Image 1 (cartoon, rainbow, N blue to C red):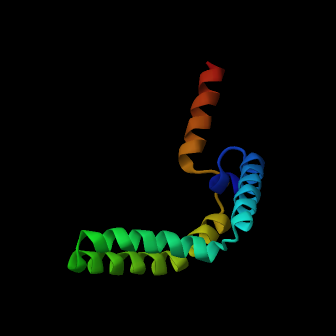
Image 2 (cartoon, one colour; image 1 turned 90 degrees about the vertical axis):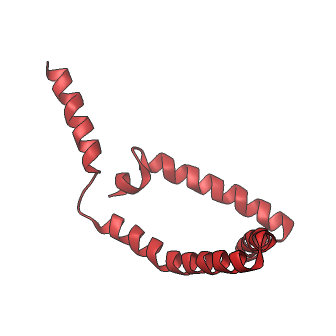
Length: 107
């Protein structure tokens, strides 16, 4: 289950994510920025660029980005849970690659 989400070495991926999270968290804390303020700033920056391109086009794109973010807030966690809950230990392509390697060794 973990290999499907984290790749071939889930423990290594977890360690990398923990280290990266601590570094980014320390950087944000040092500058006094919360994750909500960070993402709000990113969204405002994108919104400003889109607004600069044109008001009518900008409104359409901002609305689409808003819908995308709102939808992703639901879809991504559900997708992650479904990936973790699926019975397959590895993607089918990985099993095929492993089977091919085993066949080559047998020859």
